[in-house]
Length: 218
Image 1: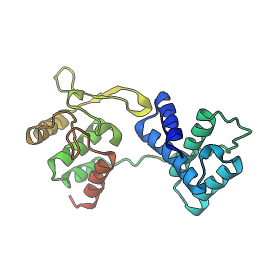
Image 2: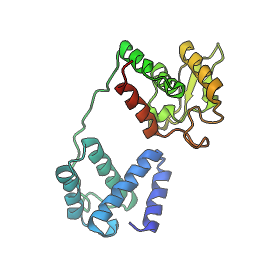
Image 3: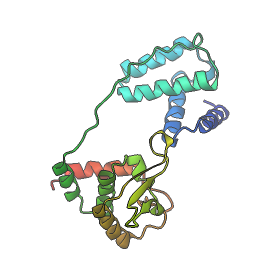
Image 4: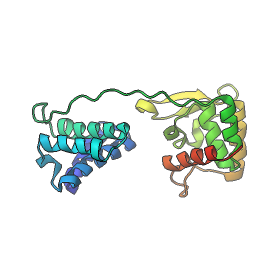
């Protein structure tokens, strides 16, 4: 995909207010298609697009969630951005697959936290479980999102799922852990900064914290 076309599509996704992660995934989906045929994506036929989707499913054996993102990204590019109608681009509807979330028991959460001696990692995981946050939400927390006034005791989550803001409960136990963490690390902007303090901890790094804790005995 040419840099000009990529920039135009990226701008289109920005106007649609797609989340950064979704935006990157859609751009990657179209770039992958273009690289597969070594041709500009706006010059491909419906049959070629269908064959590429078959390749993702049968040959690459991508997980359904990954295939679904690719499908959605291509539909957004061809129908939403290029304006192709259903006659020019015919992608069959995908079955909706719902997976139940893995819910840990109280003992499992206690074991997970007990296996995390690093105070920053411990505080991050406790915030996730005490406040019911998604990984993408916890890494975007800033210091001013923690409302520790006794009459409030809330955590403000900005641009969560569905690009909506909301509040969630800040427990006394979580607050005490965050205070210990702040006294030791003194974060200035992001509650959980990455290697570069001007940037938040990445989602992948936070996921590794969780994965490492699961592997360790309490």
